[in-house]
Image (cartoon, rainbow over all chains, first blue to last red; front, top):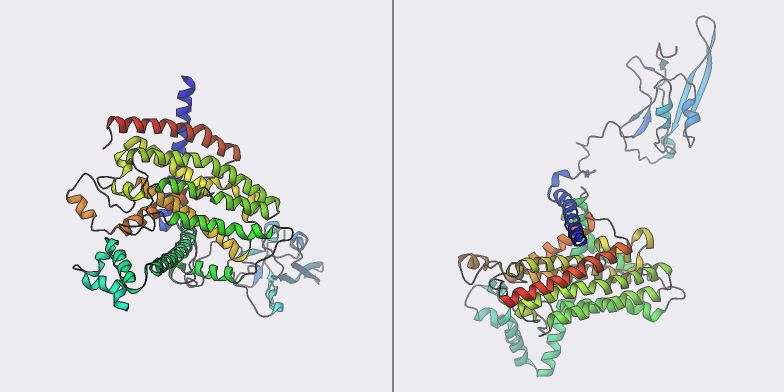
Length: 160
Length: 379
């Protein structure tokens, strides 16, 4: 008797859980608002990318044309496929010391896999991701970018 | 001569407006038959009618197949919060047409060491079986290719032959994936056929006939799912589950299990031969849904309660063709919902479900139904 009750209980519990699953899927089916797909080329004007989307690596500069990059080269070491090349130079500071600063931070967008290791490991938060994702160009050379703007300087207070 | 072909005769002789034809196709088909008889000898009349019906079924097959592929992609997309095909034509309705054109142009790759005769024969067996079942289904009043007096028996017998095509495809491909898929499919179809047959037998007891037109006519005072109440509902649920399993779809798609067997029995097929299998699968789903609609939900019969009242007459305004396809596509939607909700079963779970749950319940259900009919406790 007990086994028969268990058998029937099995069936009812099974059917109930199956119906629960079907309720979820049919609710999604009948609610067109839950669709998350973007119709990209049509809604290009109104498209809002999420803050955390990884479009390309940039180096943020403030309005005095200053950045955070000290030229340490940790991003270059961490990049798994060699898309970052940091070229630094030695200058003499005002108090007569020699100091290494960044000359060119070269970023090869064509090789980048957007893993984000450079952004994550940068000790002075000099790198960030922008949300721009339309990178198609007709010339491969345009994909090699210099991230620090010409004439830019290291922001005071980063290196301490 | 053209006027004697019946259609024009029929339309000019009609008392009501031209759309009366959607309510009753009997006089239209009779008129065409009479017109053809006037124009040619009985032998050629039969030949012409067979050709006409054949072409109509080919067109129907292609249209339904393409539409179901599109519907499947759309339903799946909506369930997963996507849009689905939306590029070609409004809402992407021409996507599957484009897919078909692509498949028609693709190369048919010959398989080394395959049994070429059986390899090429297999898709046709599957397709022919589909056509044989489609011919027996009543689509509307008077729109019924063959009205056999053993309709349900014929449908069960013929539809179980499609497993031969599947097994042939698996065997002749000379590939381990195909063979495994075919063997699984064989085991599955053979065991679930029992449940399908018994579930239909439950309704045959209630209807008192196997003839599909009689079964539909018997639902004039209420669909069998309402007339036979509890046992009919149980039989309906079992039929839908077993029918889904018989079409190798949904949670029961072990036969093709993409993640294990690449594609199952049609792994080695390419181009249009693959498309045949693909279409046959969708038409099988249509067949399962339309049989369920005919047996349990009244086929083309509008929603009726009781003998003759105002509600029935309002329902009669909707043409039977629309009723039939509405019910069928609703059931197809339910079957699609199964596929996109439940995870795939393991082979032991599959056989447990059939032999330990569906079959015993079905047999008990059959007894209950027989008892209810005997006592006259149905409506």
